Length: 174
Image (cartoon, rainbow, N blue to C red):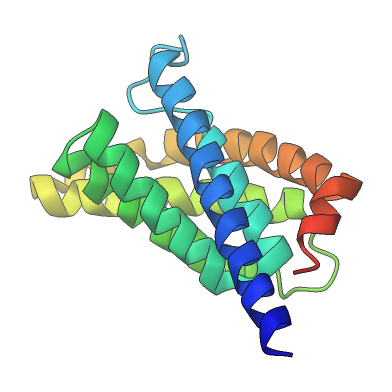
């Protein structure tokens, strides 16, 4: 019995490591190819596909750990301490809201992604107001809600498609 638990734990750590790496690659691609829409700070949120998928497959704790590791490592490699603060605020609020909303019967991963995208942008706006001590930034909220919903829709659809893959279902049986 002990061997089975050790293998399961090792398998879980390997899967989490791979998923963290995938999220970092998505984030790096997004960093290299910003959206040409002319609105500062708007991104597709591709790295958020992984936490949403992990949330659905393994639950909140692994999703939170993977998201935290991804944010810190990506911030160190591609950003700075301010970008880490923004990402942590958005990622934390988004994950909490997604954990809560997915408990509602009938809400799909796509719906969870949309709500998560909006919450992510609200979290980043809150930290922006806090860091700049400028409340007028809040006027940016309608744009961020729309952008978050669109990005969340993209993330949710891709996460839903990923969750339908039979190979993904196999790794979740660890």
